[in-house]
Image (cartoon, rainbow, N blue to C red; front, side, top):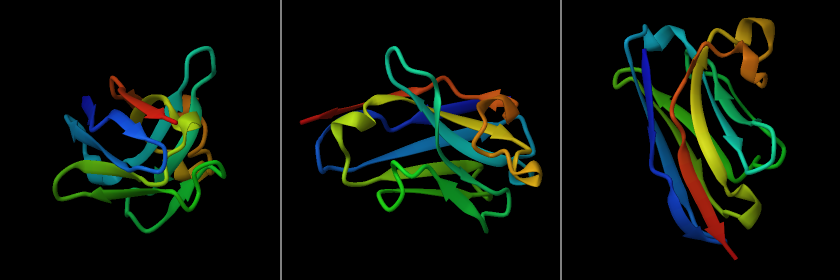
Length: 125
């Protein structure tokens, strides 16, 4: 199984970035997907999740209305559109795959089976 995150980089406050995560080696369309982030010295935190059908999404309060998660099951891809970026969004962003929605634990990192390598997002003020 491989999850390859990309799209990170440097953005100014108020700007936008789109993260992508390419999945291979698993039946992608049957896995819930999540995005998490980890800033230096902090624990990994939930950002957003999407049900395997794509019909349900959830996001952390800190990014709600600014970030949007989506998926394309035909392409084995999950995306995170990040708008109105803030300096506090600076972190390494990880995509993850698991069967998490059926227990309502899509926000818990330990519920995910597979993780990507992470992509750095840096937002300057």
